[in-house]
Each structure stands twice: as C-alpha cells, then as structure tokens.
Image 1: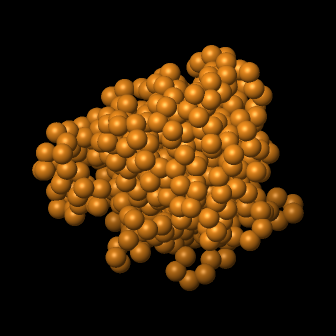
Image 2: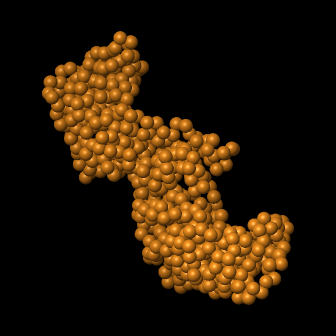
Image 3: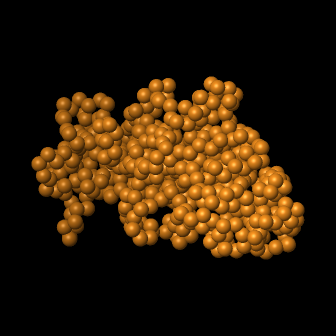
Length: 554
C-alpha cells in the first residue's frame, strides 16, 4: 500500500482539519527528550511521528532538551540523543533547551503569583501528599495558601537567591484542591535544588517542574501540535490551565499510545539499572532496546522507520511483537546486505584431485541487487565447511555431504566425499573429496544435478573472526507485567561467542560499516570492538523467523 493510499491516523486528521480551517498556516512539532539516558526504540516511534508529520505537512520540528533536573542530566546524553536523531534520518529546525527559557519561566511564575494563582509552601513533601487527599476524598489547603502575592513574591525571590535549603519551600499553582484530577490539586511548579546544571552552571538553585516547563516551552516556541504519550492525558488540563492563565500561545497537546514491545524493557530507569549493575556492556550493548544498541547490532535506520510506520499511531496501549521489528530488519537487509561466506564450526575438506595452488572464482554480492556486482573468492585444495554439513551415517533425504554423496560448493564446483579421516579416538578430523572439473558454477557442463549447496572458505586464504550471536535479552514475552524483579527474567543465552570462525578474505577489506548476510547463517555487521588484528561481527538477526509467515498470512 502506498503512502497516498494509507488512511490517516487521528493526529493527521486533526492536523489536516486545522490547516483546512486556517487555524494554523503551518505546523510545528517538537521532540523533547530529557537528557538523562540514551534513547530507546520507544523514543524512535516518537521521533518518526513528530519529524514525519512535519515533513508530510511542510512544517518544522524542534529538538528540545527537557533539562530541568540538573541532578540526572549530562552532556553525554545530549550528544547521544543528537546522534540518534540524525542517524534515524532527521534534521531539526532548531536545537533548543528548556534551560534556554529559565528566565522567561521565572517571570511567568511571578505573573501567576501576582494574579494570586501561585503561592510558596513551606510544607514537607509528606505533608503536601497528605493534604492532597485521595482520588475519592478531596484535598485541603494549608495556611501557606493564604499568603499575599507580595509575601509570595518576596519568598520566591529569596528561593531564587539561594536563601533556603533543598526541600525547604516549593512554589505551587493555586488551582482546585477538590478536583477529581489529582494533578490539579495545587501542583508544585518550582522546587529548590542546589545542583550544578550542565548548561547554566550555578546560576539557578530553583528549577521548574516538568508540567510547568513543558507547556510553556511549547508555547514560547509556538508549537502547534504537542504530541505526547497516553500517560500525559491527566496532565493536559494543567497544560491548558497554564497557557490560559498566562495568556501565551495556545499550543495544544495530543496523546498517542506509547510503544510496548515483547521481550523488551522500555524504561530508561530499568535500562540504566542494567548498565550500572553490569548485566550488559553499556548503553550500546547490542541486546539493549536503545537506538545506539540497535545501531551497533546492525539494525538499519530505514528498518526502524518502517517498523514505526507499520505499527501506526493508536489511542490505546498494546503489546507489539518484537518479531515485527526483526521482520522489517530482514526485509531491509535482504535488499542491501552484501553476501559473504563464513564457517563457524570448521571441518577440513581436502580435495585430492585438485592440482592448482588456487584460483579466483566470482560470486555475486547480492542477488537482490542488479547493480550489486561480484567479488573474487579464492578456491584451493583445502577448504573449510561447517561440521554440521557432514553426516557419516545420514538419514534418507539428507542432501548435504556424506560418504559417497555429492554436493555443490557455492559459486565453485561439485564435490564427492570419498573418505572420512579420523583420529585415534574416532573423531572426524577431515574429509577426502574429489571435485568434478566440468561442474564450475556459471559454466557447468557436467550434467550432474545435486540438491545440496554448501558454503565454504579456502583454508589457505581464510581470515579468523570472532562472531557474537545475539538473542533476545529477556526470556519472557511481557517483561513489564512479569512476576518478580524484571532482572530475574534475563535470558542467560542472550549472547553466544564463537571465537574461531573462518571467513573469506573479502571481509578483511570491506567490512567496516557494511551489512552482510553470512550465507545460511544470518545477517551480521562488524562490531566497534574490531581491530586490524581481530575482526568481530555481531549477528543482527537470523535469516528466518515465524513472524514472516504471520505477516504473509495477514
């Protein structure tokens, strides 16, 4: 289905109505991450949505860092977020920070104080929580709410001047202590934090709360469509209250279902736990759901964008099968990945009637790409094949190598197994085979037809590599709702390392940054741990999955 034929999602319907009515001449969206961790696949959905809408409707998207909590934020996270957005294929109109607006937000808080709509509260956090009541019982205001605007202004200015310790006072909006929406029961909009900020240093010791900074930052930037996930539905009335009472640009908030995916955690807090407790090897561990982890694992940006488009924009939370993401990755890599031969568990084959030192054969780089070209593959008397591709006593309909049986070597010749060589313990150490000279791929005149084709590597030319086989990090489908600690469900077999794989020499020349299909094995990418002395490859995804069948059925 082309993009023109797709039905509009509910946000697109709102935007088209707004543009048609003249409410907005153009749209502006924003992606507002807090720089307190690395982005994950859930953020990718928000990035693709916000930037995609602006691209579709000729608008703009700002990248705005919600940096209102100096304790947890860091420039390392800022840079990683920028890299992830760019890697996904998007460019922002402006790079902005909530901290850019600290002076304006402070003045807005003073306006609310002057209007009698905000007051300084000396209560402890426990007292404030108790005073708020419960969802079924109304809250009660304390005596501090009776302070005059002049008193509140003086105290707020003293808070800014650093005259009080952390937690000694807060500034609260004066809204409705009996509201059924607990977030409207005089919410805190400023708190004291004597902490160095990654951009403003020690200039401030009071910082706006998210609910105050978010809506006003949207308004300052004239964001027309502020798109959040469903957990922000209860926050919308406060968002609207602030804009209405400050008489600022009327940004509007819309909510969509966040991404929940099987065998995955989508919580920065939990991801940070995995990193800090060394259950993974960092934020970019290829088993992580972070964008940097997926990039290191070899997931193409185009596949992630396609996945986000396929899952769509919904109003109700659901659990997406990670198999769909893997399907999108395979679809993309099948079109783009270079084919190479790599043997993981080597068994030597000696071709007894091959008399040349070696010859260069050609093999296509990608049969799906007519412009993919070919590469040279050296063939010699001794080659490696996979140990699992030989069976001394095969069952019926076994089409791989066996005594007296023939197979084709990919892009090379047909060979026949003549003798099995064993050591004193009876372990198979090598095979003696003969080849059919007339059976060369591309010019076969032998008339012999075989059903099995094996990949192989010339022993004299092979390069050694470490191969890391990654699987899902968790062994339960719905990690968020599983019993016990989420870390109890980590898959102990999520990483298998093969240290002695043999690869065709082309991998040493052209492997950096390219995606590969190791024939009959899966899709792989060179890892950042690689060096000139040691090549390391990560399995991106296996060749086949049951999800593909489900997609075709659907």
